[in-house]
Image 1: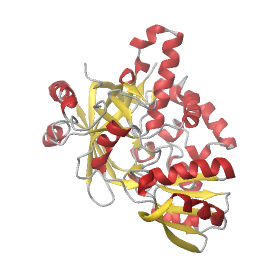
Image 2 (image 1 turned 30 degrees about the vertical axis):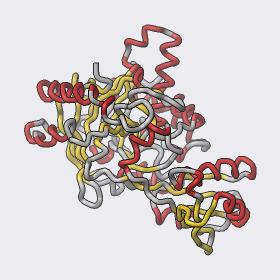
Image 3 (image 1 turned 60 degrees about the vertical axis):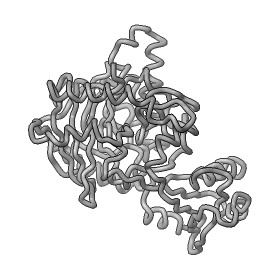
Amino acid sequence: MNVFRSAEILLPHDVDMKKWAVIACDQFTSDPAYWQRVAETAQGSPSTLQLVLPEVELGTPREQEHTAIINETMRRYLRDGVFTAYPDAYIYVERTLENGTVRKGLVGMVDLEAYDYAAGSTSAIRATERTVVERIPPRQRVRREAPIELPHILLLCDDHEKTLIEPITAAKDTLPKLYDFDLMEGGGHITGRLVQGDAAKSFDARLTAYSAGAAGKYTDIPGTPMIFAVGDGNHSLATAKSCYEEQKKADPAAANGPARYALVELENIHDDAQVFEPIHRVITGADPEKLLGALKAVCADGGYPVRWQAGKKSGTVYLDRAKGQLAVGVLQAFLDEYLKANGGEIDYIHDDDALLALASQDGAIGFLLPAMEKSQLFRGVIADGALPRKTFSMGHAREKRYYLEARKIR
């Protein structure tokens, strides 16, 4: 049985879809004004904003208040008939980005028994970056009693031959259109089409063949091959996994229940519209000059060039290539140790301009990192294990997945 499969997918009907769909909860964490605008846009209409906890609220009075109402709002939406259910379905998604390219994906569910986010995992579905376990509990508090889930998880396949999703693209005009609208806050345009019946069975057959061939794709490198990689939303999938394991421990029958699965969107890493963007670092609450002085210990001539900004000062450091395969790995290892010993806070910023604006403030220092080649992803994770956390971003911040589809999990 495939580890990615069709599901009973819920979509809202008779609602303003632009107000319904909001961006992934872990975006714009340093920009409360963004989320205030989202709240103003969604006001007075059913919205996924009421069903998720934006991380900008973590540690604020709003976190506890919002967490308390999420599950009740989910139940109310179910009682009020907000959703239409599409059984045994996939949804083919086309996301038109700001630059005009179209990113293609397929929404379905993954088997959490085939996913393990632990370091050194050899599971069929694998985390691409180290999971920060401290980020899981706030999400667990929402999911433990939640009747439904909404995904912003993007799963990746390494489909050079474009055998899985692309045949659906070729036949898309034969598929019923479920939604077609502009996303709020400059998120571009999104269209979803229903994949059921013969179209779904055809995809399942292609996936079976693809999965069977995975073992032979990476024979030139050490490590256990994987079928899918988590490209975005790893902490959300880790939360689903941890909550499922809790349920299974309390009641072994949960192994056959809906919590065993999680809704995701599958995309092909070789899609022409698939672009990996760097994730930058900004440090506050630390002495920038002292930090730069300590950073010299991991620098070397001919190293990875990384630009920094601290207030009105800027420059470039050259990180020692002998200390890691990626600049982000060398920098992150240093920052983890430095901040643990000296104090300070780190945030992860997707946009260049946003990073420079934050780093230009007094007492802050930011690092602009280079992008990782997407062809390195599967081979790097198979050979070396999970990459340093926040190594890459699939597109710019506004290109992240918006919450849209849902699925019952109890």
